[in-house]
Length: 91
Image (cartoon, one colour):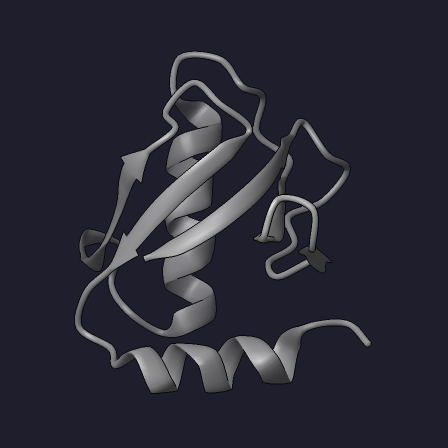
């Protein structure tokens, strides 16, 4: 389970784009607008691509209409997710 602080309608797709310590969440930016689930689909695709898992292994567990989302990732270990995201976070 990953908590995301999402900015929909951004200029570019970026994940992870940083960490929000106040919300205890990774920052995720998607260019898709927050209309008709477009941003949610873009988030799922971006997280899957970043972690190297199929999109079917990523699901939105909470926050469908919120900027704070909980994403569930299957098919990859927690340690591997932490390793991948740690190496990608901007310093």
